[in-house]
Image (cartoon, rainbow, N blue to C red; front, side, top):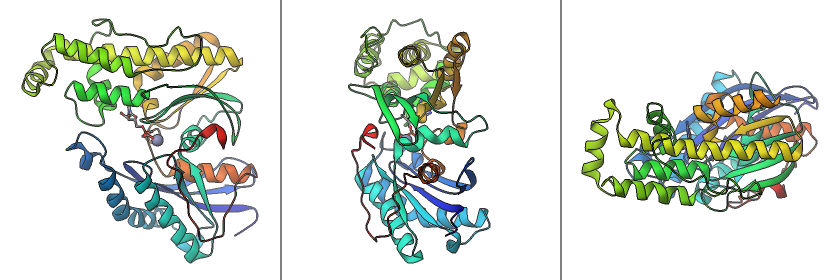
Length: 361
Ligand code: KG4
Ligand code: ZN
């Protein structure tokens, strides 16, 4: 390993995407992404309407080594060039995490290289540092994924202060569960937001939970209940045939498209207003949006508009790095090393932390 630069292999396997990437990092300056490869299990889980943990683990086993070979070949490197192996230590599905941790540990041991376990959400919130428009510290981060919804004050790498979080469902979960009720395929977020484009966001009056709670916490479970109620009124709740008929009539619009638009509008409004409140409370003028829901077009549009009015710069990861990927894990390892924080373990041990609080890093 050279003292001045490292080549880091990153492995992500916390849920339903196997991601592997290779970055190079010098003591200072931006991290360079050499290559990354991803296998999404969406098609496999779609038949079940959600992630089946056992199937996820087995698929990670099948994919991770071929993906590692692919990123090395794409970057014109070999295994021997890898200085450090970074992997997702948590949070996530225990079995899925164990696959990435096991492979990382085996590789690092065979190569005689150190390894580093990364917090999945740290990967998400640092991911805009791989974009053409990277943020500067400090900033407010809105982390919106399938499992988490948090507002953080980010003072630097590894210096995260929790400002607020969801007390029940995550924003991604609200998208996914509402979409499922509407008969849309898994994962619902991208499908719901696509159909919402042609709907009327004011057609249904849906709650904006905790909008005026006076704190920076979120709650999305009630929204799903309201969507259920509306579907019941439309005679579409748990009624596959009626849902299929309603969707077939959709090119001309219709209540489902309007309900999708109204649901998206409710989630986005809460996320935008709470983010603005967090910026006001901290006095910061930079916002980073990360996690799968950060790919949502309406959320980006409204945050950009609100930010422009308040002199706030809003940063996002590249669209293809919004959802889970190996690049953010390799990047987090690299930035922790630059910050002098990386605890590079040379011991052939691996551990995972399926539940892990980012603010306690
Ligand atoms: O960060 P991520 O890939 O995985 C987790 O760590 O959870 O986020 C996945 C979540 C899912 O809930 C998915 O429906 C949501 O991100 N998502 C979206 C969009 N793209 C992905 N939600 C709304 N609009 C989108 N365009
Ligand atoms: Zn994620």
